[in-house]
Length: 386
Ligand code: COS
Image 1 (cartoon, rainbow, N blue to C red):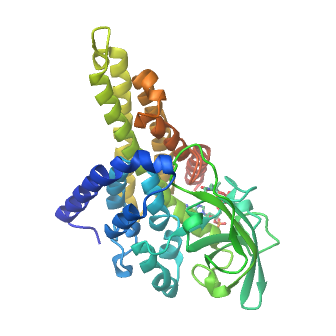
Image 2 (tube, helix red, strand yellow; image 1 turned 135 degrees about the vertical axis):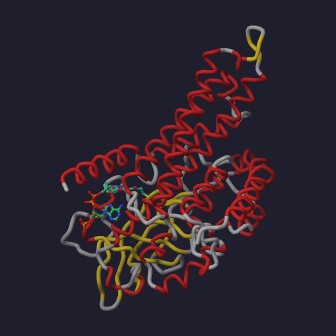
Image 3 (cartoon, rainbow, N blue to C red; image 1 turned 180 degrees about the horizontal axis):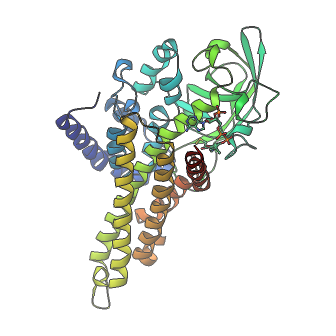
């Protein structure tokens, strides 16, 4: 159920205040310490932000895609690390259960994910299966009413904190592609499941990824998302989850671009060279104007796609368009922001230096730009041939 206009405005105002009064002031320290303070995590829980996209009947806020995009525009104004903390519970970690899970799986997990009492991770990528996700090698061998999982998952966001993993594994050993893949819900602490060392990343310090190692992990057939009848259907679950996730990431990119533009404009109006603020210089104005127009274009695309998704349309192509355009756009905006700041933009004293590194990830995860291009073109050809 969509929120009425007034409630949505109130929610977004509260979020905006929280971002400016609590999150932005903590950004630098979080990056330095590579850790979000527990007290701040509790404030994030108290605001219900772990459960924005989880239906109200499971204690979430039940935001529509349009509403979630509006929230992501605001959240994107601060370090992407805060979004990453809540991102998997709202997106790739919970949506498989919401879209394809059994009523029992929804009741067992969604309220805990909505409150943030449990963190969820999405374990699809492997050392040899990134963009070609369907080629994954993690095996799930049937043993009576159980499956035995073996394999390694790589770069798994929030894995060091996760209580629940959606693990994609090959149940049909005779296949090499996406057709023999199944999605399992595996709880942390299940014997045989262990974690690798935290990865050392280029940016997004404070958000953590690591390997998830599965050695003879036994799970019941009921742990398959949607139950045993959905054996070998896991890849489709992953793709549907990513359709929504890609829109969310796109909206975060717009928020980050807005922040970079705001910081760049403020700097350009303050910084004087050749006897006047550099904002008066037409070459600087060109950079500001390009960034503003591109961020606006991305926002419009995302709002339109979100509305269509809420109306029940298949937006696979449009979500890929948004992810491709918005993530590339924020890369260009970050580059211009550093350029406008000149030497200062290369110094960690200014947030643009951190954002420049942080936003680089958006062009890679939840499907690289090249994978979005492939999805868009393949869908175009399929639709034209139909
Ligand atoms: N919604 C529902 N079903 C979908 C779908 C979608 N968005 N996209 C594909 N499917 C279905 C297809 O219809 C097909 O079903 P049938 O076998 O019944 O025809 C099945 O899923 C396999 O699809 P496809 O043949 O397109 O699979 P490919 O192995 O060729 O892979 C890409 C497709 C490359 C698009 C996929 O591997 C991909 O998205 N890779 C990137 C992975 C990624 O984002 N990783 C990031 C990790 S998470 S941070």
